[in-house]
Length: 123
Image (cartoon, rainbow, N blue to C red; front, side):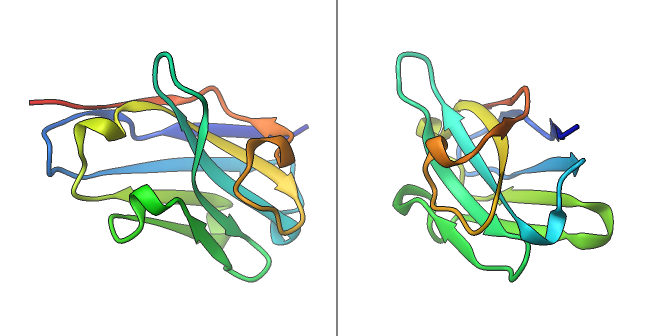
């Protein structure tokens, strides 16, 4: 049974940093794409960053390039999202998602989802 558990959300001032974690279990880790999506109230869910665990290939949304970094800790089956220079428009519920194979950063390709962790950027 696939399980994804997010942690690390919280409130931060503009310009601050947060690191989100996604602990994944029950999945073929080396043949899986794990991604972060976010959804703000009244807005559609958007892809933020994706990593293919079989080869470390990464993909980012244009809005977060240069500020966010996705990485993996293989031994822990954990994927991280390091978020720097946070802006108020980054405020959203952040979800971890997983799917088999090397996937694009679109929600329809991912079939397992975590419960989400809230990120709030405000002064």
